[in-house]
Length: 499
Ligand code: MNH
Image (cartoon, rainbow, N blue to C red; front, top):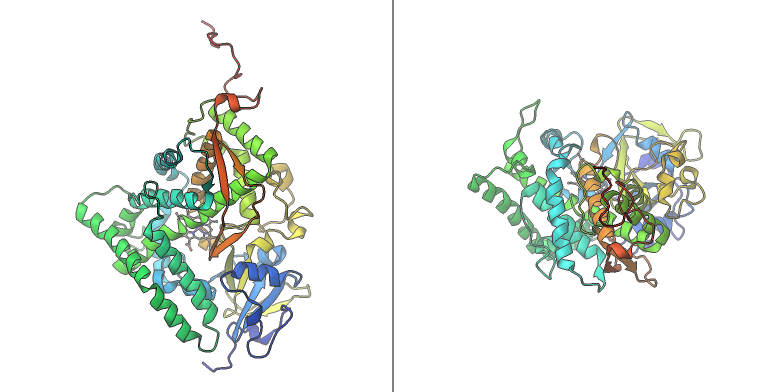
């Protein structure tokens, strides 16, 4: 490749870019390390629906606009592509489900093998394990009311949930004061991809990238070993719990009969351990953050848990009850609107096409070009969400308030056939956890805390703490219904059933 060839060139078309461009390095000096999303949101503000950022010979094109994002989500014209930060992960997770290109046979094979594990009804099989995992987190918290590190504990919980549900493996996250070494190794791997893709366009970047690799070699070896151990132990034990690992090892694609090889199985294990917990942990943490900042919304969430679960703070929702926490679901949806924890994905056209036709950003896009949809910007586009787009207001997702909203402008789980396979899993887990947590504890955040974001491809709140106080039936506001079965303050001894 020529030294001067621009990567992702868009046939030489130019789009608005941040001020302060320089020769050779272009926008590189405008970027702060370690915070790609914050960079884009800061630099892209005011640049309109489609803008570019160029780092030496690498051009990035970003979509901030709801209408254009909706256009690129049209599956008949566009499909998933991998931006450099995701492509860099292929070194560890290869053509695993998340990082495969559409046309790679292993995507099709793994998708067919794994889909049955992620249907709505498959969630029934995970419910009990999810309940037990929350029990263990509560046991760890006990009656301690000292502040908890929300993101750290939600990460313990979601990692433990996915490893138990998918791999029948207990990571011991609640009994160890340290986080599991897998979490450190995984963060290191994600950061490696992010850092390497950031330095690679820079002259001499290849050498820096090699040094990043060397610094992380031990972490990566550890992860590979852990993955191989999981398969080896399972094969040796003869046990077949019927979990996701069993499917990876034993199943073949229902139509093609193809199976996954050992390398790909290892890559899928790592894919699911990572994709199956980071984003859900962030979603829970952001939701708890916003609830702690909106006492009225929080009060309604607790009214809802009281109505559905009754006065016992330890009451556990049944599988069927989980989807009935409608207000809580809207709180989660709204947190994922403002801070979608997988904050971006990339799209390319199937054939050369014109986009944004009739607007001042009309452009030609070839199958070699890709654009990154920046979800937090799309999710705050006033044309789609109105003047209160920046505010936390779960009621915007009430059916009567959603009617008439533009289509395809809310995409926290991606789009089309490459959208999130774990969506039902994440939703079931998150609602269950939120319902139980808010039913059992009153929560209070530090009023001086200012939301900060930790970026590692996914995003999570940084340094956010909550003080938990166990609720008792008496700590409910007077007159609040304790269950949907009848009045709470029925005098003791009077049976509601006539006999
Ligand atoms: Mn998930 C794909 C967001 C939870 C496993 N996930 C995606 C995509 C988004 C996403 C966005 C599409 C990315 C792209 O187009 O490049 N995922 C989330 C969010 C949550 C989440 C916001 C939680 C909240 N994801 C989960 C869970 C699992 C999971 C839980 C596993 C149990 N996700 C995946 C996998 C893919 C994916 C696997 C890739 C699917 C495919 O390409 O076929």
